[in-house]
Each structure stands twice: as structure tokens, then as C-alpha cells.
Length: 422
Ligand SMILES: [Cu+2]
Image (tube, rainbow, N blue to C red; front, top):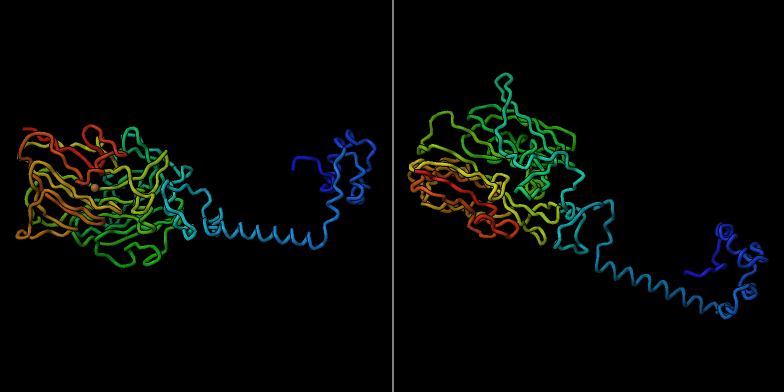
């Protein structure tokens, strides 16, 4: 109500408005006005306004109005409750920025929203140089024959393309996390310090180890709270291609970058075809919109628009240089969280030599040119450079070879080039 209504004034207001009132009504006695009731209103200097009819409302009429107001208020609340979730408060989801297109109904819990919410830019503690690469080999220190590694999680800004920066969860400020390369039989100790805004753990995917070292949060260990550390220790009993990743809300944390390779070299020579080079490929999907990074997932609103090999989208992915006749061992790691990628190499078939860290017996070594790398899987293949030229290695779901649905320099996303010279 814009107009001045003296009947609604409390004492404080009466004091405040005294100056303006006294200009309009110099002779008016405010203390009287408070007690005069409506009868006095008619005498006030409000021109021709006559409020006297308001005084004639019966008790029943007043009750009817009050009752109607209450019914309308209740109806408004009930209607709102059928459309939106009135159980959520700022304490549950305060500050969360949701992906455009996420379906949020009245049965969507606050935890679901936090799980899919954007990385909070206020939590970024490091910006990696635009040309920084992930998967750098982590150097251990050795104490009493134990190889000791340090892993630290934090929120970083990371370039997947020169012009495209994401906010990710990272081990040791890189995506993928650093490579742990050890030898079969090594005893290793890995101290994990958590600098994320939420708890985390680390799972050693595919490894034979004591259950307490396996990593699933709330199942084999208490989650590592922000600012805290946990030490894993075990003996590498296998050889092959493995990886580590978060096992606390992995649908959010792994989708934001918390994974890295574990390569275990055999103690003795393996019965594996010879090769000249090797390259490890870790896959990931990203959802980046309007400067916010959301964990990509198979949920409405969570579908990815960028795709990376070792933290970079083509054309920023590595190019592998080879000579005709050379052979390369490619270790595909299914660090991708939600999506299957049929990884294909042009220029002739490859031989499948290891699956999920297990050597394929010679009699079972099939040749293929495309292998479905599902979440958690590993495939080691050996490809021979038969002809000179630029041979593509890429996912065969064409959307996954675009950057936000755009092709650049012939491709995008999960694409790299094997450049073979004579
Ligand atoms: Cu794909």
C-alpha cells in the first residue's frame, strides 16, 4: 500500500512520520489518534475520504474474510508443493548451480542436485598452464624397500583445448592424475591427501590387495574428509594395465577427473609380441556450459559436449610419430565413467594382447580394428604401421569426435593421429 494509512502505524512509525504528518496536519494529536479508533478517522484531514462503511462489517463478515484468506493461503501452498520441492532449503543446496536441462521435480533430493551441480568456481585452488599435460609419471621415494607415492586431490582449472577451460577435480593438479609405474612384486605405499571441498577415497582398479586397501567409501574405509589423509599400502601381485580412481561419489568425482593409470611391468619377460613404442589412452567425457563444468553423466541434463584423450580434446591431443614397420602397444583404459567408446584405428587391424590386465593366450589373440572400451575396461592392442601417412585413432561414435558438436581440423574430442613416415 502506497498511501499513508495512520491506522496501521505503530508507535515507532508514528514518531518517524511525525515530521511529514505535521507538515500536512499541523494540529493533529498523534497520541490521541492511536486510540481514537475509526470514528476519529472521519474527522481527520483526509479530504473527502469516508472510511465509515468499514466500521459496519459484522463479526460474521470479518470471520468470513479471514476464513477465505486462510483457504486461499493454504491452496497456494498446496499448489506450490505439487509443482516444486518445498522440502529443500538453502542449507541443502545453497549455492548449487544446476546443469541446464536437468529434470528437478518435487521428489528430487538435495543430494541429487549437489551430485550434478557445477564445480563451484570458489573452490578452484590452481590454474594449470594451457599446455600442461596429465598422466606424468609420478616419482616415488624409497624407504626400506617400499616405494612411497604422494597423491593430493584439489579443484583446478584445466584446458582441454586452447580456448576451452574446464573446472575439474584432479590428482596432483593434472588430468588424468599422474601415472604410477611400478614392477610386479613392488610394495607400494600411497599417501592420499584430500583438498577437495568434499570427502573422497581411492580405489585400485583390478588389483589383488587386502580388502581394507581397496578404497570403496563407507564400505571398506571411512571417506577421507577435506584436509585429511589416508595411506594405502599393498604389494603389486600382477602385471599389466590398471588404473586408480575415486570411489566416493565416483559418478561426480571421476566424471570431473579423479583417475590415473597404474602400469605394472612384469618381473620376467612376458610372452607378448614385440613392440617398439607404447602409448596409454585414458578417456573422459565433459559437460561444460557457459563457463561452468558439470559432471557428465547419463542423466537428463548431464550429457557431455566435450570428450578427451588424456585430458585433451583433438586437435590438442598428442600425435604419435612412427616409421613404417614399427609396432605400437596402445593401452586403452576405460577411465570414462558413463559412456562406451568403440575405439577404432585406421590403416589396418591390431592384435589384442591383454584384457583388463590379463595376458591373452597366444591361441586367443584375435585381430580387430575397433574395440569397445567400456567404463572400467582395459584393452592392450599392438598395431603395426603398414603404410606411411596420417592414420586416425578415434572413437566411432561420431558425436564423441566433436567439440561441443563442432569439428575442427577434420575431427574433435576422442581423436588422435598416428603419423607414419617411410
Ligand atoms: Cu565414444
